[in-house]
Image 1 (cartoon, rainbow, N blue to C red):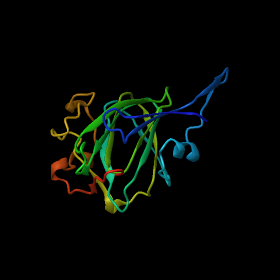
Image 2: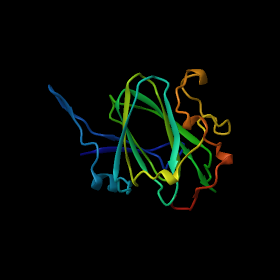
Image 3: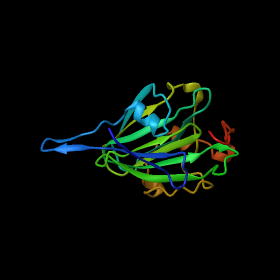
Image 4: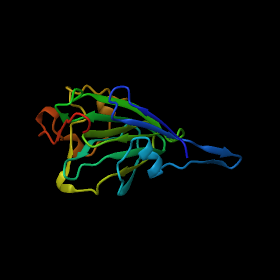
Length: 193
């Protein structure tokens, strides 16, 4: 297995990953996760749970979600079908990039993945109907520590790919607090999250 690994240009703790695909007349094969190779690439999270979601409509927003300590999660996200506009927001109090976001496309056809460490809120918007994503997490789901930030927080300034009246969200995702109203669940530390 070989990996192309690139830090995000806006939030370098976010890592873009492209595993090699080996093709022939049948199609292609890709080893999408290998713990030893990911560790050598600097991704040391140990993943304990795999999640998968299907969004029927383009313009479906899920997020911005995170789990707080002691159940904070790192995520490894990939798209199985369709395309998503993926977003990560630095929510580590004291970080020089606190409240900054990065956004990028993840498409099933490329095999691209993204690693999002603890201390970042995550969300995405589907760009095609019937889009499926899968993501690994480093801690089990814990309802008590499951939180979110408003997807439309004006202080974040996220430019979603659809107009607000064209977006589909859960009732819960419509009422998350703005980042300035949320307690500081994470604190920035030099040399780590």
